[in-house]
Length: 101
Image (cartoon, rainbow, N blue to C red; front, side, top):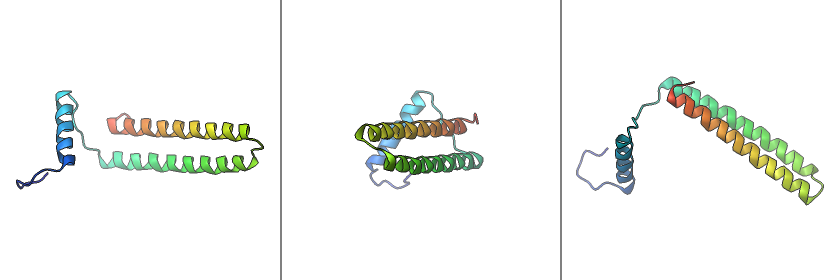
């Protein structure tokens, strides 16, 4: 935070309001430990690799698609896979932050 009397930015004001709301709601702010940071980084790297692998397989499948219906089906499967992987990643990261993993 700033130590002088200069006006605060909109970002700083918004962050103060959010911290105040969290405090009123009983949510405490905890710092992430170095071990948690390392684990979160590992999780992100793993899921980046999985998403890249899935993208490569998807592009290969698209080249083999014979009609519009098959193409759309492959696109939908790819979208669902990306959403599933992102959800798994976010869940695991949240568990690490909460100290449950």
